[in-house]
Length: 201
Image (cartoon, rainbow, N blue to C red; front, side, top):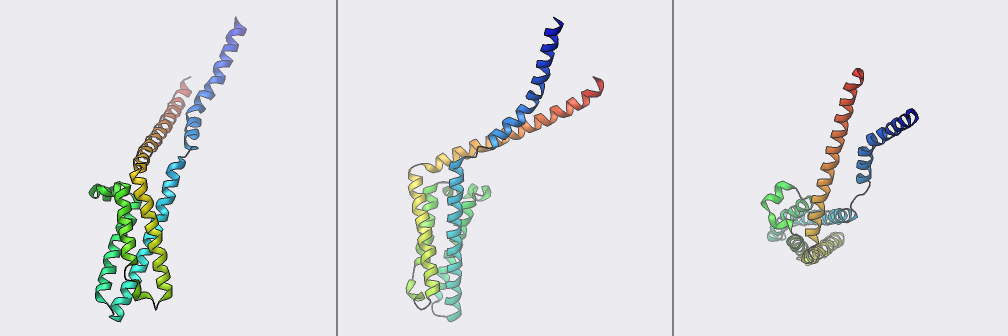
């Protein structure tokens, strides 16, 4: 009986460290499995932001050229509006909660894609003014077509409800991260309580 009890005590002793390590180990396992779909969405959002920033640069250069040479004041004003709207495109890709609260349409991929297409068309407009500036004309073409392609992908994805899938997975990821933090807090609290109880054992 004593052998059995000592054996049982040893089993409990072994199970104790396992129980201690299980919360942190499970948290590590959860963190080791990032959502590949969300990673792909973030990469595409980064590419879209780069395309929008490139459009901003092109439109700023075009506006400066128009105002400096006095060739076309209206073209300069048009480029300024293109810059402002392109800034909205970049901010929309950050999905800043403050902006999304006032611009609900940007939460939907179809609406975001149409805004990107609009900026791409504004950037590409009036290309004849840049015929004598091949570098700027080439940069304008690359920026506008790249953002246009991103906008088309967004519109198609929005029609296929992929944006809703992304938002659902984001909520799931946030809930998982919160659960991990709660688990780590509980583990830390348990260790503190065990430390307090050890001198009295």
